[in-house]
Amino acid sequence: MKESITVNFALILFCLLLVSAVVWFADVLVLRKRRAPDARDPWWVEYGASFFPVILFVFVLRSFIVEPFKIPSGSMIPTLLVGDFILVNKFTYGIRLPVINKKIIDLDTPQRGDVMVFRYPEDPSLDYIKRVIGVPGDRVAYQNKQLTVNGEPVEKRRIDDYLHPERLYYSRQFVERASSGAEYRVLNDQDAPAFISDVARFPYRENCLYNNSGVICTVPEGHYFMMGDNRDNSRDSRFWGFVADGDIVGKAFFIWLNFNDWKRVGSSIR
Figure (cartoon, rainbow, N blue to C red):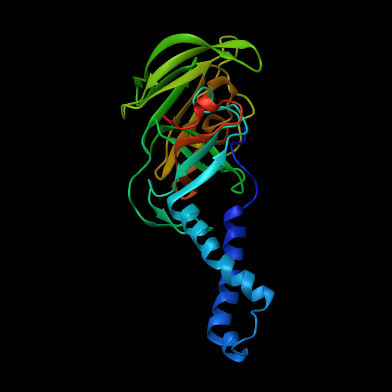
């Protein structure tokens, strides 16, 4: 259930920035001095110099402040719908170097209930989006579709069933409340099995116990346990394991566009 694009846009943008910067500095420091005072700038100098500040602005904005994503699948329904264009805060969990994603300044840590974008552990070229369910040291159990964290059932209440408009069927809908105080909606399909199949061989696999009722995992240090809000239609930490701190991209916070549902424009993500 991919929640991202596969192209490494950060790397492409970085390469464009380097090329335009080289052209701009070469012109300022060397080439401009060799041209006649009334000579016109070569086309490659003109374009390179004009694009450099624009590319620099986009690179800094996207790398350190906010990054846009589009939601292509339904694993986070009802919180996020297919076609939502969202914004992700890049500095909530610390300042990271672009491209290599290495954290250089600590600011905050993910909290239970956060909607977080991260590099998919099985293929880091992909960015996924799920909800933080367990933080380092937590014991997360999802048994018979009941979620508990550190032995305490996660508070939830049932609300009206959710109608999937494109597929025309209903899912049971609940409001969960994380220990952090965050409230969000989740879905369960009554006829879907609790058993988890097709589990990958992931790092710290020994921290998880699988049975006919679901899974019980202890989250290792420096890692997080993630789940989709569309619980029976999300391939998440139950299947491929934990998300390392070094794979975090940022916290999703805003829906800025959806061509299929204009009422969602301007909505905050909870």
